[in-house]
Length: 213
Ligand SMILES: [Zn+2]
Ligand SMILES: [Zn+2]
Image (cartoon, rainbow, N blue to C red; front, side):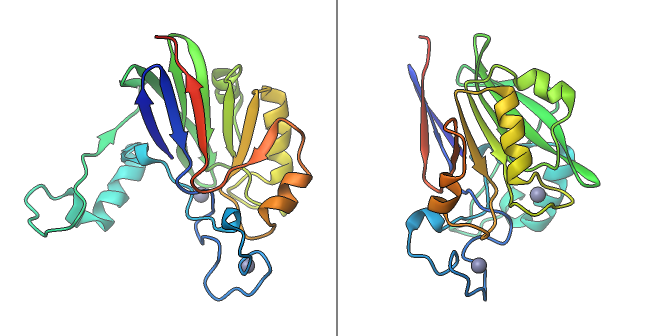
């Protein structure tokens, strides 16, 4: 996901709406993986701000992509990043961002709440197996929710579509979006089964917020 703020507007772009295998999945011949609908192409669910993460996330990222984190690396064409370990709310361009630890099997991942002057704009909970009560309380009243909705079949570390829909309805956001999806269903088929306030995210999708100047 990327954030673009050109006051008085905030634009959130879904960079990836798929699970870790991506869709199409390598070697899979299913109808979803072979679909030519661009909304069925799902790259790994991602957030541009992921470089703001917990120490548990940033440690391994730095180890694996050490070339990108080494300030002395002179290899041309490589990305260079500046990691920020976050545990407390922080501010970027006037938007307050609150990290929210959520369970993901044996580890926890971070969701984020984006607010402006007390107005809860967006809750981003893209990678989790449940949403604990304190996190539900923190994101209650958010205008938009983006939530892990992996697939129909239960999974040890991710929310099913059924569970995500139930949580989304309980939280009552104006619009909710399922992300982190497998190749189980085509976009158009998944959309057909959902309540009116819940949609399926797709790569490149943009969500806009009018900000208070
Ligand atoms: Zn497939
Ligand atoms: Zn995950």
